[in-house]
Every structure is written in structure tokens, then in C-alpha cells.
Length: 97
Image 1 (cartoon, helix red, strand yellow):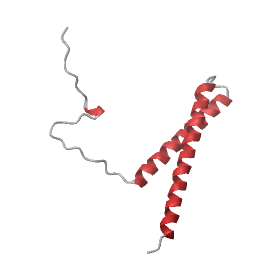
Image 2 (cartoon, helix red, strand yellow; image 1 turned 90 degrees about the vertical axis):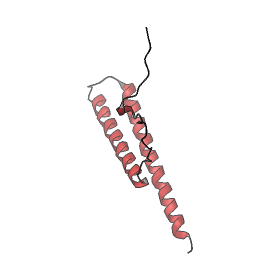
Image 3 (cartoon, one colour; image 1 turned 60 degrees about the horizontal axis):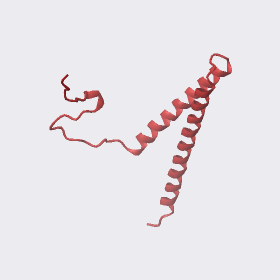
Image 4 (tube, helix red, strand yellow; image 1 turned 60 degrees about the vertical axis):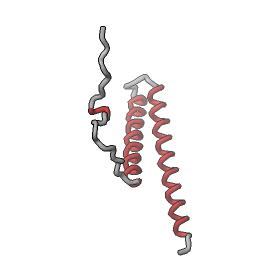
């Protein structure tokens, strides 16, 4: 049986011949906003799974606890990024011109 070439479909990010690779043009604020939205979605999912477990709609404590912990980690990371940003801002403000 002959084996054909491996090809990638466009949805997996295949680069067309002759196409120049362009860097993604997004700023830090956009990245932070996206991550904040993802963290919020994670928190909402954890809350809904927690409510479903408390109401007896599901028996899967493992997935519920994983969702809650993932949510807590996301929230701590957002807080840590915020604190670093504030520290950087204060440091810049203390600089003499």
C-alpha cells in the first residue's frame, strides 16, 4: 500500500509557499484583556459545576474540584500580573527626568 504525502489543512495554520510570516500585531493590553476574559469564563464554569454538584445534578467531584482549582489559579495569576503592572508603574513614576 503506497503512503502519500502529509499535507496540512489551512485551519491548522499551514503556511502557503511564498507567503511571508507576519508577526501578530497585538499589544499587551489586548493580551491581558483576553486572559482576563478567559479567567472570568473559567470562574463562571467552575461556579456552574459547583452549583450542579451541590444540587445533586452530578456526582463527579473530581472534575468539579479541577474546575475550581483551575479557576483559583487563573485568578491568582491575574492578580499577580496586576501587582507587577502596578509595581512597574510606581517604579516609572519614581524615576527622575
